[in-house]
Amino acid sequence: MSQSDSWVVCIDFGTSASKAALARRNPNGDIFGMSVRPLAVGVRDNDGLHRYLIPSIIYIEDDQIYFGRSAQRMFADSEQDDREFITSFKLMLGPRGAFPLTTRLSRRIDPGGIFTYRDLLVLYLAYFLRAIEHSILEQSDVGRDAQFSYRYARPAQIMANGDAQIMGILKQAKTIAAVAGQKLDRGQLSVREGVELVLESANSNIDLEFEASITETAAAASALYATNHFENTAILVVDCGAGTTDYGVYAWNKKGGQMEILGARTLISGGDDVDRVILNLCLEKIPNLKTEAEKAQLWRKLSSEVRDLKEKIFQRGSVTVTFGEANAKITKRQLERVSDYKAIVANMKKGFSVYSKQAATMVKKSEMQQLMVYFCGGTSRLPFLLKLASEKKSVRGMKLKTLESTPFANDALDDLIGQEQMLHRLVVAIGGAIASDGLLRPVSAQNPSTLSVTAA
Image (cartoon, rainbow, N blue to C red; front, side):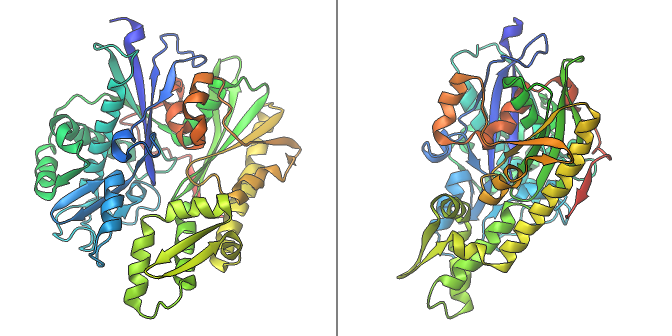
């Protein structure tokens, strides 16, 4: 097998949606001009809608476990008002994880009281890995005898011994994907199948091809440096996820010919906080909601689609919400007047102000002349976030510039996904696939003690 038959896959298991990218391994370790592309993992899952994304969601009903878009559809159509789906379960791996992964799910999610959070993480990732396999098979330039190594893009902050735990989950998930692939292709499993697969894969000896992990901000910065030769410019990546906002500042070392990290921090605030405000606003504006049962029913209905509602509110200025025969128009202006939303905005603005100043100080010491700010992640398109850096021309004497889009030099990549305006959500997977080895952490590494968690 030649070096050209060696490939790197990076998976970005997101809080709201999961993505992956594939890159041909460069034997020289040079990240410039590499063959890289996002994988269309969502084609089988959702009939082509958001073809590069799979919703990170599971729903259990009538002895069946549903994944991704199937879970969203089944939940939306369900008549069982006392039931809930599970999403944002990736947060159990991070600083918001309030209880062990071995905790059993509530009966509203799992009526039989059978599964733990770890069990569902394993089953969801098995489903995701199977989708990745399908997408790789569709790549015309990948040979039958090609070899693959996998990387996992992770948050800056994870639980103690988190890398080892994540790799254990991925190993078990890969075992399930290998033995139950055709069942997973349906987008669902029976509860009995799920139980058997979790138990049978618990002590798997399967060869795990995951070589390392990389922080999500480092992956995003790698993608930017790989496709743009920024001269004397450091990059502040602001990765706005559903549960947290990660900051990472990076500079290109010309002498060493590689990117280096100058600092990192995590703000425990994200898109889920905005989602809750929108849901409460909908409850307030829909007329004739007289009972708690009606309010609970509306909350349940909207919770599976709140992220789509959020996009429409900020892109179009308003969205109409319907419940039975009643409907209400929810506007961006209404949202901006809600005190809880104002508090979220103030918190994230303060976090950006504090860390951009710290980043500028770090960059000055590295003798860079400019600090470029790049927002990525599923929450990064919120207007107030995009204005944060554009309103400032300098911080502590350092020139400040906002990179408002992801200007990949690879025209084919631009053509591939430019129409969907989704590069800000895919940049982590793309960058993780091409990142240099110096930015990777071995799978057995401990959680770095140099990173700090803050609630600004």
